[in-house]
Length: 213
Image (cartoon, rainbow, N blue to C red; front, side):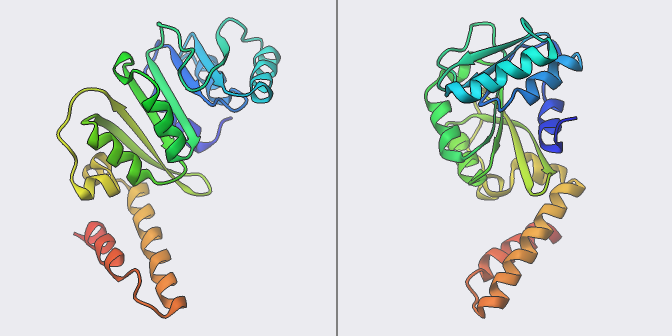
């Protein structure tokens, strides 16, 4: 079974689409998508020979040759024309941005992004390029992770609250998102308490406004 983080990403993949998983990490997500009948074909991309060999070993062990295609590629440089959906997960903001800036975003139906750092900067980048955030999820998997589905369809720039906390998440306000905000609030309060400073006072007020209004 895959992790809760990867499971949430898999749940955002439409059935019968071709997926390119950038930085596939042992092809765990591609295997899940194929084995559960979500996709008939998934490309598992890696930029280094070592990780690519791990992908190949996993594919051979599970007998999924021809359904999961290992690809030696820097981002989407070697992506085939039949790719519908791109997954870029488990990386930092700057790496994800590099991949996006190095490809024709409009060529794909949509992207699924999960950044380990600076999710607000990622949303700001999407906002500045007037991309559309179509869906968002927060999942707890040892840490709180945010998953963003976006397309190249044009959208007006997002507000500061939407950039920081997510336009879809703010509308949906589900239990996991509210738990994430509460955890964030507790951490900032604890930092202020231990440092005996008011460094995060404005941030605390901002999260309280989002959480309780």
